[in-house]
Image 1 (cartoon, rainbow, N blue to C red):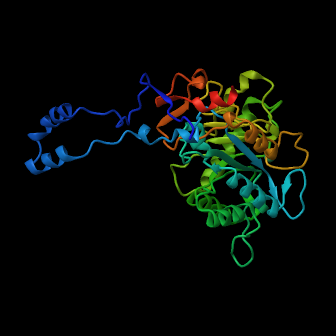
Image 2 (image 1 turned 135 degrees about the vertical axis):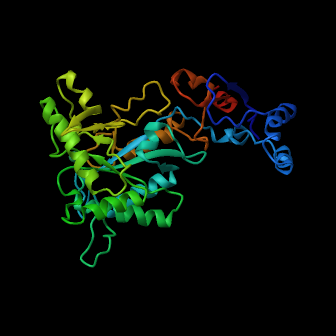
Image 3 (image 1 turned 180 degrees about the vertical axis):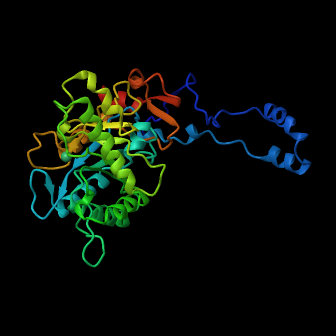
Length: 368
Ligand SMILES: [Zn+2]
């Protein structure tokens, strides 16, 4: 009914390593395979020759979904989950309501590391979000006396929601400070490993929930490196590194010479390195493909309805409803970046991914 025959422009300057997409002339394919003939049994060669050419993933990208992988991505910030709604407390019912709203509005969680590395695995037509919980309060992850997980804890609610809506990846990052993450002594290792085994991530929120504003170089590295070491000691998987941090109070050193130690440093003979540094407020994050994306300063949005000054989660859900062109819409293929051609100027030039531009006639018709 609508003219969806879009003009497709391929930009081949940045081809991905996994570029199986390029159509291969049959003759070329045979020639390439000739070198293999000597090395392989005849029957195997024949199998290679009859193998169908791989489909170009771009042929499968549904442009009617108006993918825009330069759009914005919300990183949502939670703290407590408790029975009384407060500025930094969400009730279990409200957390469930949030998840349902996000689900129905087409948002799907991805991990923080996938966000910062640009590995957007979100299905086509959906918008990635990142869920975060700060402070490691017991109400985020509690084992009851009978050993079961508290269903009204943040983790209990996330896992339950995922059971009900399996296409809503219930992945989240928990930013932990202090000695006893989640406040139940003796359960630290069990909890941290359970999180990792269930698709969650654990991040740094410093040793003492420190304010970095006037901190010394030594203390800054102790706060970050010391906590990374402390948390990693509980974790079975030696390859898992605590490499993301949520800044307590969103605070940064006044002395700009120290900001490098937010990213990396050394404490007690061990190096630490962060791939994501999270602020406290107040905006949606840039696409990881956007020139303005900065892994050292990722904004977050408060997932609350109390004292959010019109910049809370529901404000932005409304905003993206009214401004769909601002929202990241996945093309469903992590190795390809799809966007309307008028957004090309936003895209970073250092990406090793294929860029797929389209001209959207529908948008032009609507605006006339
Ligand atoms: Zn905090």
